[in-house]
Image 1 (tube, one colour):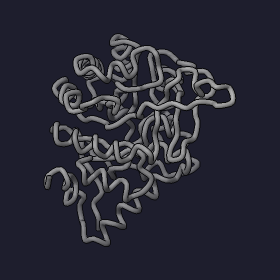
Image 2 (cartoon, helix red, strand yellow; image 1 turned 180 degrees about the vertical axis):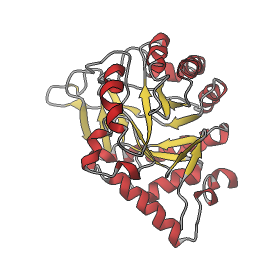
Image 3 (cartoon, helix red, strand yellow; image 1 turned 90 degrees about the horizontal axis):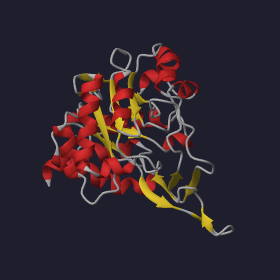
Image 4 (cartoon, one colour; image 1 turned 120 degrees about the vertical axis):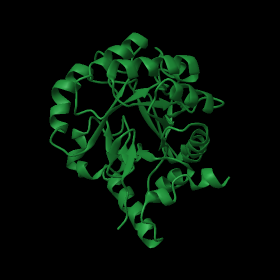
Length: 305
């Protein structure tokens, strides 16, 4: 019998495979494709104090090994998420993490404070790193001091475990990870999308109105894996790995590099049932290799090098 459970910041998750924010809607959309009670946790699409309409079209383009997106954090706002989404998620025995963001620190505080008495929400993931908005966005995540200020403010306002989602668009991620750890983050999510761009050769213009966009999918997996390894060596809090995971083997790479858990993102857009497959493949690997607990291999690369 393989034990896939993982305990992070006092919460027991059934397994280490989570649905990444922005790729699984608000969770309810997935119930037609997957057993929500099977996944380790659902991370909702990011919400802000008020609804946002996002960026103008086009917003997504396929690349040879992933996608570029410029959604611009379109969302229904925190009030509708609390009034309409959380009661639906209440029906499922699944851990719920809400991704939040604001245009400034007060915005982060406002949205975080709204969940103070929402017991259905197990933790908050703070987006410090979206590359697709002009206000704040990636600029927050590149500055350790601002990242720490936002993290500390959200911890105080929400009184819930706070996961800081970090950007890969930096030279060295370790100082930022350490800063949010010292500010009270319970964990870090590593990493958000990489900056990229596309050009429409017919119009001879950038494909996206914002010119640059966020690259995700298998193309970024080796880069994300390196960031997870570096982060796990720099901090003591759990690291949640993200970046191009499409299979159990991919997820195991991140776990061996030091990730306590992983998030599956862009692959959900190709196959909404992929998370279930990833969980099954991890369990099969452990069974075949005589591993009874993921603790036996978690961080094995980090420890050996």
